[in-house]
Image 1 (tube, helix red, strand yellow):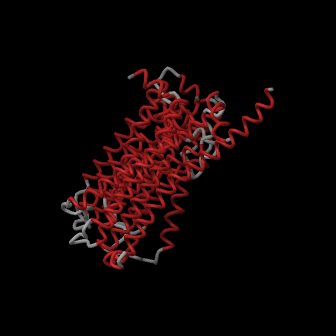
Image 2: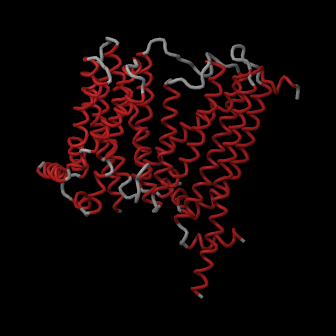
Image 3: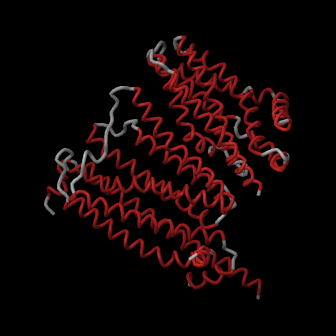
Length: 221
Length: 247
Length: 56
């Protein structure tokens, strides 16, 4: 437990030293959405209908930005080997690294998302639902991204490879998140898609840290 | 039996075995495909509802079947490769991905050609189509990941992990779209193949599907042979083999 | 063949491209690994030739 807390705290400390780096994701997010709104016709009603998917796709892309850094820095400074040799099970350490990364890059997106929705003209209940879907969905995104980052940690230039690996795995999250917000906008109960999002998160949290740890081991062999 | 299996699983004897088997599978596969296509295009009667457009089924269904069979085989091989660290299973994973991707793309393309005259649009966001599309992306992800690694073994094992995660993902995508569509009431729902199929239409379909499967096996064996040659290029058996074949 | 066969009951523009694509995919699947194997064997032979020269 102490080892997990130490890994978690180390991540946060390292990130706080470089505020410009983890501020990239929210800024990127803002720019994407502004561009989207500017490219559409002013006061286009279609923009409101598309707002949930704009907010979600923006969050998806922003979440992908920093994902490569999660394990790559550790591989370069040798910290990764220590992580895998530590007595604490490696999957738990991987999970706590991903949790720290979520706190730093995704939590701001969760906070901004509903505001972005409101700016695009989404009504209040839609924004509320958007907040819950982001809260439940972004940890799943981070777990998937962490897995892909672990897979490609040994590859010299992961670049475009990472989105290719991550995006197909993220489709269920995008489907349910969009579905929940749309259901709320139509006045239908939105609990079911939220439960599905929670189920996806549980599934991802129980499986992916193990697979990611295996991928890291493979990269180091 | 076990001893036989072990002997076969060694790269040199597998290479030889695959070299003998692949041309036979290819010949059987192509013959069955030719028979299936002939039966489908010429002998089978036109469908009373879909007319002659239903004949696309003889390309579409075998391709779709292979896209699923190929992914299942790849996922099983991935599991075997990761748990028992068998080199041949790693080669199966790597060899399946490009072939599977091509048949998935074929299934999508022929599905679109069929969809246009039947339900008026090339593309509908239906569960089958969407999961097939995600399947294509997963196959391409495996291909891209493998080509990014310089060490073939590390690449194959990374691909195996990705294939396993993808195998969990595909049914989730399928059911999430089923559920998602049920929210949009009255969304276009279609059932390929229609309600039932007459024997005259069925036998060419089964023959073609059998032929495609044999063909696929031949292709995977060939690709596995290539993979083994690359991996073991400095071993004695490759050194002995190469001058004979290349001469 | 009678012209009715090639017309495919008016669906020729859909049926024939589907079969053409199918045959193209089959050809690609067999020819690409086959060509790769030829190239591989040739290259390996050259590589081995060099190292044999060093050995003797």
